[in-house]
Length: 139
Image 1 (spheres, rainbow, N blue to C red):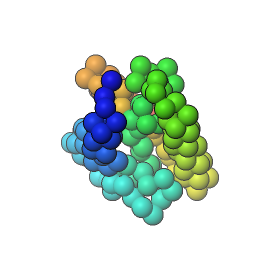
Image 2 (tube, rainbow, N blue to C red; image 1 turned 90 degrees about the vertical axis):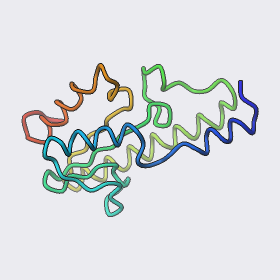
Image 3 (cartoon, rainbow, N blue to C red; image 1 turned 180 degrees about the horizontal axis):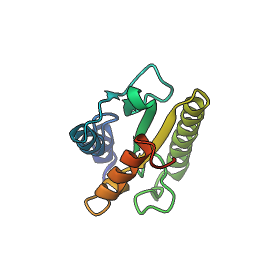
Image 4 (cartoon, rainbow, N blue to C red; image 1 turned 180 degrees about the vertical axis):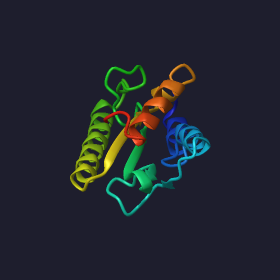
């Protein structure tokens, strides 16, 4: 258990863009020849990665912050449950609205969870994304 001050320091140091999972995925996509824009503000939800050539938006979600169902990191904290429940549900609803708006406007959307970018799962995730981008697989 952390003190209130220490928890505040930890939470305020968490980034909203250029996170390690995003950087890892971007580096791999670039190495495979895909070119993209990052945090593209002209699209709903400011996708973490936008590939204009493929009209595809990729969101890299942290399992905790975006409430990844069934993931060990996607659970609510035991303290201040009301606050965290509202915060995470608001994030989920915002993500859903952004995805719906993009799809209504003809964009493909891909959601990549932080846990899918771990060493044991990374290659499978990258292969799935590549297949979707190249039209070999549907979202």
